[in-house]
Length: 386
Image (spheres, one colour):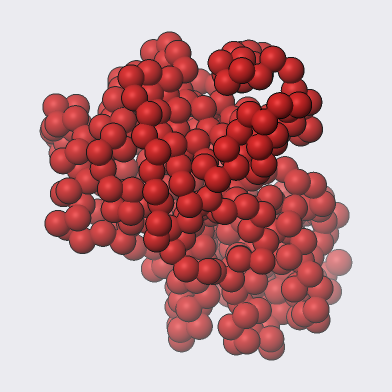
């Protein structure tokens, strides 16, 4: 195949995870790209419910039709206290990934200018006038490329920025007895044994007898699958549940790091999603951050003579996240006390606003002063000296 026979596109997306599909959907909604050819490449056909996304919001978003459950109340707990929090004006929302995939691909199927190919990307090469992409089956060129294929080595083969994982195993369970409160999500329950780490249970009840029960850690090393599942069994027993049916299981590991992935962006190639540092480093939450950044990106590429390397803007919230990760990297056992100090008396509305990176300097201070002072002062000195 000579160069004139290689299919050419205005935009190519390598990987069709959350960030890519959000961006493409918003390109469709904008009505500004109907004359542009768009190619999506992924080895995964996106036909399986492979993850659960949660996010908080005040008002309805474009994703409202695929939200499967909303909660207006949340429980925070550790071994010493429990707090039931009224989340209003926010709601905490759950989306099943397959519902999201079907929703976006249904919109894509009506666009003659968008092509999805189930192919594994093997090569990306930026040239002066275009980007070359190779797959196991074919070759393509594009004017611009959005890459969401995460390269683990970039973050893990350096020691300037700490890298933790938000890793978890979850069971979707059905019980014979009424065991759950379907109106309240268990946001973080640190009453489980910490074993020198930051460990908590996360429960998303969808009825009195059904819930996703997830054992989660913020730490460097993963556990064996048996360890996660043993802790889930213990937790269910402590809730008075001796027997239950496991409807589904999910497992995941999300990198938590302030590593500057955006420094890999170039004139024609932009890393997005986890590969671009779109995951909120201090919490592992991806949905809300990707929702905001994808909207910004669609506006950005409508500008004249844009260059991908100019898309990212670093904020003070990146620095706050860096301080927390520095603490948890050195003293992983402090996670429970840090989050507990934040949620014990803190205003949930202000905390969510802070995590959404929408607070003023004064509001930042109100949140930060709730946290233990000494670890953050030590971390601040370490980071500044670096």
